[in-house]
Image 1: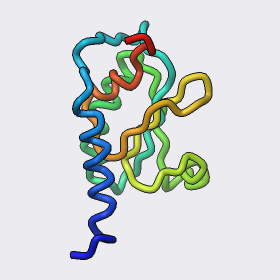
Image 2: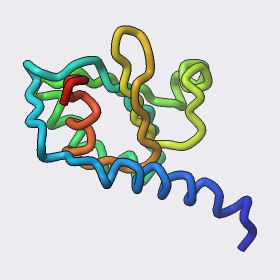
Image 3: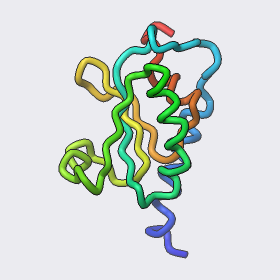
Image 4: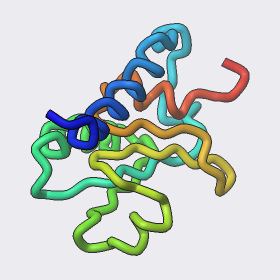
Length: 119
C-alpha cells in the first residue's frame, strides 16, 4: 500500500495519540463551566460520523455548546475551516480555533476540548 493511501490514517492516528496523553479526568467540565464551542464536521455517509453521533447528541442534550455541520450540505464552510477528513472536531473560543481532533473522539476528549484554559 502506498504512503499516499496511508497518509489520512497516519494523520488521524497522530491526532488521537496527541490527545490521548492528556489528563482528561483531572478537570470535570460541565455545561456551565464549558468554554467556547465545538464545531463537528460530519456526513451522513461517514461510518465513523454515525458512530460518534450518539455521543455528540447526548452532549448537546446535556447543554454543551456543540454545532454539527454536514459537509455535504455546507462544503464551503468545511473548506474555510480546512476540513479534509471527517469527522473533524474544532474547538473555537472567542472566534479563534484553539483545538482540533481529526477522526473519532471520545466523550472525555470532547469535554477536555472545552475545559477552562487554566486547567
